[in-house]
Image (cartoon, rainbow, N blue to C red; front, side, top):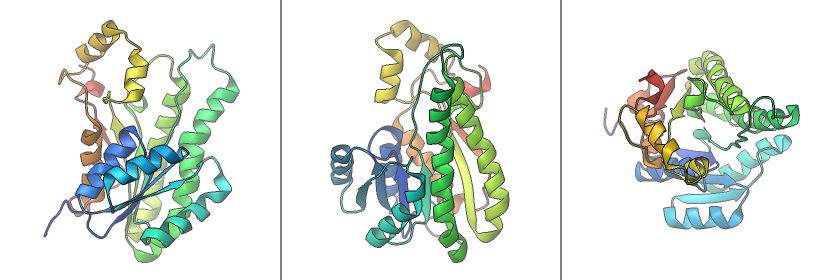
Length: 252
């Protein structure tokens, strides 16, 4: 196999692609030869990220909670860069509260973003992928879908839902040349992580103490894992969740 880790000829649509893990994935995809379309709500952030990535990147401002507009988004992206062969469901929100303090409406808002919107967009890209017998759908799960963490019940439920969705979808579409997988990131250097620690060095020390590699990850660690899962090198892999967490989920 020539260039087994290359994404040359692939076109990826990445939600939440303007910052953090989404941008890290986009950066690695571009280095591997893919075209990328960054999707998010903040035009200025998307424009800056696409400019930084270079001529292989486009951006579209879109709210994925507009479920009826998912097909329109896919058509718009295809008109700019060609048929979407990789979808990365990365966009999400996070509400940190105990279960007693979390309202049903807040719980639902997290599920709507992570699960329902991701399903809607996946449903929009699948017909053409199936017709072409080629495609990859990738979900950003979380270590919270593998181990118990406090004050994130809605987030954990949504991310655990990703795993069920990945496995079920894989059984339906993999016979048609479409692979479906997930990555479960651990603690990755980002604005979200810094906000979570909120200047609390003791918490950071505690997290590192539960991470066998004793360091935080970088967005590119997630990006290269995503590149692998969407590359020819992983052509016999579907329906899995790949932890990228420095060993944190093994119960060290």
